Length: 84
Image (cartoon, rainbow, N blue to C red; front, side, top):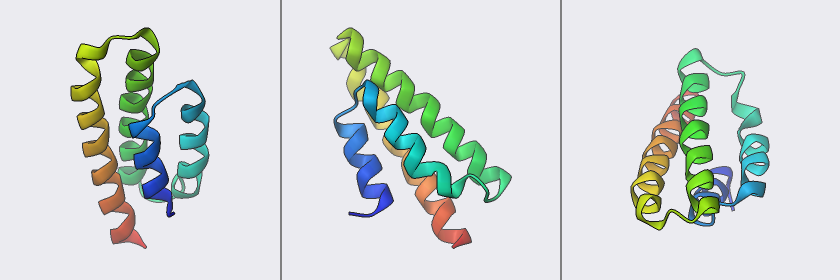
């Protein structure tokens, strides 16, 4: 399973432990362009929000935030594949 498949799995099963794992998976891309760094930060903000919503049991908000996190992850994947 590649890095982005693992990140997608973390988005699907978001929990508090997943934040550290996502950070670890993304660490290798942080030294790329400013645009990539910003995309990582945007994804992580949305991912942390998703984890918070899941942990607090706010089911009505999970689907739209999960969708946003997936969109940010797709943008990040595109950026990383361009600079590889």
